Image 1: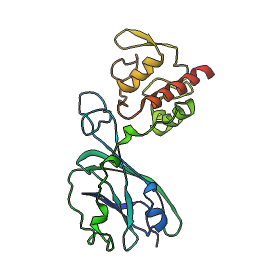
Image 2: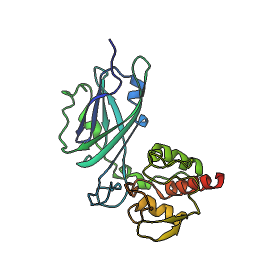
Image 3: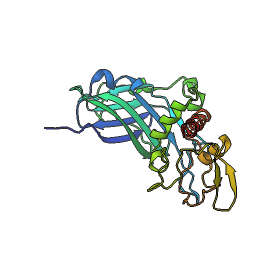
Length: 254
């Protein structure tokens, strides 16, 4: 019998998250809190296409949720991630890097909306030896979010990785191709003159690219629909700088 390596269910609880799988997990990997990352954000609903990411206080950005500890259920098929300050939120993402008991790699992301927070019944969830008192979060200084973490240096290589990870290739080619693309090619973009639907124009410099990432509806390139989402609160300043550096290399090569 073959078992799925994908999550079978998830439950948001006061003090953490329960993720249940269809197969037994490798204990060492499952109980290492460093193998998980959790973050959350809200959206803003406007007439524009898409939305940036916003923290619960309304400021731009995402909140990184610290995983204090990870616990394996008695049947070895579920994990309880001890996470403080669980609240209702439009989007929560949990990334994990695990292994099944048989050695298969389980590396994936899980997205869900948190509509309700209830007290966990750890025994009913299958965590027979887990004492709820172990989950007390006493050190408020440890409960800090992503904006306190140092950012990696900007680089063109990092920008290329972001271009791939964010799915930019679905709308913008890097080889000059335009057929089937809903956005202009990035080849030769940096330093070129761009013409917009309102009959204005501008040079595609660093500030123009940053504006396009943060406020894509501000100036729509002539001949295109302008259906690009905002990356406000999604990309850090250094990540935007990395995107600029990468796009600049596409003009240098061109």
